[in-house]
Amino acid sequence: MTQPVRVRFAPSPTGKLHIGGARTAIYNWAFARSNGGTFILRIDDTDPTRSTDENTQIILRAMRWLGLDWDEGPEVGGDFGPYAQTERLDLYREAAERLLAEGKAYPCFCTPEQLEADREAARARKDPFQGYQRRCRNIPADEARARMEAGEPYTIRIKVPEDRGDVVVDDAVHGRVTFAAKELDDFVIFRSDGTPTYNFATVVDDAAMGITHVIRGDDHLSNTPRQVIVYEALGAPVPVFAHISMILGADGKKLSKRHGATSVEEYRDAGYLSDAFVNYLALLGWSLDGETTVIPRDVLAREFSLERISKNPATFDPKKLDWMNAEYINRMDDATFADTIMLPELHKAELIDEGAEFDEAWVDALAAIVKPRTKMPADAAIVSAPIFATADTLVYDEKAVAKGLAKEGMGTVLDAARAALEALPEDGWTAEAIDAALEPLPEALDLKKRIVFQAVRVAVCGNLVSPPLGETMELIGRDDCLARIARAREMAL
Ligand code: GLU
View 1: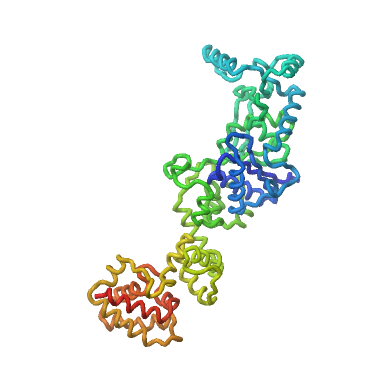
View 2 (view 1 turned 90 degrees about the vertical axis):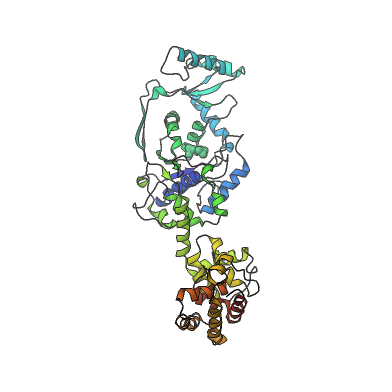
């Protein structure tokens, strides 16, 4: 039986959750879900100068909005906690002590000046290896202990075994990557201020938490050989690594603020749907079958696999994200659209009062014409605004009036439309009846259909882009439509 999958997303709370981090989180979450595994959230807050609680809260909120529920971590707990690195400092110290006692690590008393002088000397003699010259590696253990106890400042370095050949990493995305062990310093695992380095703390945690797969950005690929050395020193199994490619902007450069919004919250606040956003980010470097684009969360959680991650960098395309968002809105059923998008947006735009009651059929009819015209949630209010106006408050778009209304002959069109519509009784005011009443006008007036309907549309809606006329007029109601036409008559020639 294979080991149950345990993966982690380990953001550093030095900033908000960004698109790249969100994608890493999505892949970890989806990998855990598709394997019946455990998804762990760990806060890597060991950089005290740049980590803040506020950022941690922002990250947790963003994760919740993304719908990436974690099985262990902050707020939910778990058997392998605590889940913030600053609360695990004792564990790192204990691990380092153990490696010191086992002779797998050693204290280094070199001052920064000494290290710099050694580097300079290596440069001068054109030594291909210009890293740490292992000056303190062979200090006898009792002497080292005495100096430590006497209070001399020291870092702790790992002892890369003399006979360690190349470090070979079979990365699930990049394939086999070989690093020459002799290029690896006896690197620092504990600083002289008593704090662990990233490569050490991460491995101590990943080992203690039983992480089986490390899925993260490929900016960490170069850290991996050092981490492998730490696993080996700790006597812990080395997990599978999957380093995912960078996300680029349209100009081929690494995605950054220059390309526009980068934090998850900005997308949430702009009105993107979490499901659409997750779907879009999942496709930045992964595909289901090379062609399917709409991959709902449950499918992602079932079908995600490391094999289908691409090693090529992905390009973030805001237009494709917009398309995805519109697609998710369009695929909603009308009732869900009305409840989760349309009514809240109408309220936000102050077109309706909080908790206002509407006839259910009326709301359904409105949703049916507004939904196909909603790409971003705020569009729902823009599209609906004319419907919620009255003959007195309707705002006429100047260009629409110039194009559709303020033209010779349009007065006659409106007079004819008004007469035809007035003939409809209040209880016969339906989209079909309205369309049928207007239908004969072009022929009767000897005008193009487009010209006639455009004039009526501008008169009733104030613009040229409203939803289908009959449906819209039914929703507005008979009396107000007639009053609008009367008002518009003054603008027509
Ligand atoms: N805290 C690290 C980061 O945010 C985590 C790296 C890792 O996953 O090992 O980049």
